[in-house]
Length: 89
Image (cartoon, rainbow, N blue to C red; front, side, top):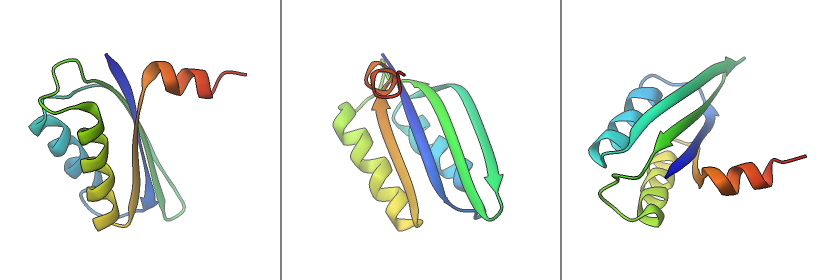
């Protein structure tokens, strides 16, 4: 199963490394990544494969969200099918 990870917040050193490390620790593979800085704001969207994740999806989402809050970032994870349904015109 694939999922979309979004990260938004003020730019700071180590955001990509922290998110990728947390995903790697849970055996989540990054398939594609796009990131940019809009003035002082960091934005990133990742397509990940969670089919071999070592924790339940809800736990992964909570852990990423909690880590984001500690860094003053908004980190969200959605299943790809739900993300696509929500963003269909």
